[in-house]
Length: 397
Image (tube, rainbow, N blue to C red; front, top):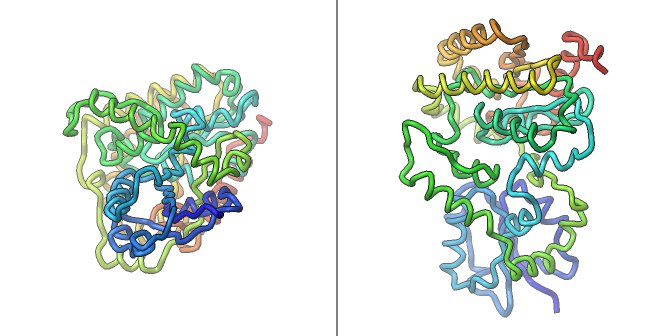
């Protein structure tokens, strides 16, 4: 008798779930979800009216969405033993630290370049299109401090792989990047869960829980998906997950979404400016300037002749146009900091925010601020061409 399952997944896990599932599993129903609003409007009659042994599998990265989804599913009378957290069961086979998961793909390879930064660099800069052997260590909501900490951990644990670096590219997100502190942001919980870093004290502290309480929760979260029962279910339902990646961690989020017209119209009718852009956090700016100095010093310690490139990637032109007035203020702020840093360190700043060959074309984007696969390929090819021909990286290879 075939095993039966109902699937819920964030849209970017579609390929992973479909490619990994066992041939003898019947998918009764599947739901692709993008938001809590999607969960609130789900028609779950298939669960309520299920007949016999039916499992519920879900691949949801966003913790708030997962909590809401579980509450909704459990309200239909599902026994917890029939629930399978696909994402957590898969990740249980790898280190909790993302930098290790990514760097382990490069073991015993001498890298030519590193990419550090935030989600825009993670999806917008393609390793395989950069000069030489490159590792992209960008991650969603990764601020300058965690860029430095990521590099420090790589220096301690992957010295062989990075000791001969020729260049580093640092995605600077936007002109207000120095104003951003991951720990004080609303994205701190999802960042820690996925990055494997523990929380640290910050002043001023803006969380309901203490650092100790947050870290205790994180340690519990990192144990999810590791029980014998969960691993048994995972191997039965998704036996090709390990075969698919051959034991080498890959980003299983497939960024193949396309920017929708409805998203553009919604932004045009009611443009929203995040607090990060509308308020100056002086203590954060000084903290992050200090971290950028530490980052530069560590890069020079690893390889004194390393070339350093800071880049600003373009958001969709509609967003760039709306933000231009704010950017005038922030750009002055940003360039003043860059000017001060240039007194002590040699680096180049490549600003693509007005690069309309990319930003003016909707098909280059997966959402209003992140490049899609096509846009990332085009942008990276352009960046690589500049690095090689205008900034002389070709002489280093």
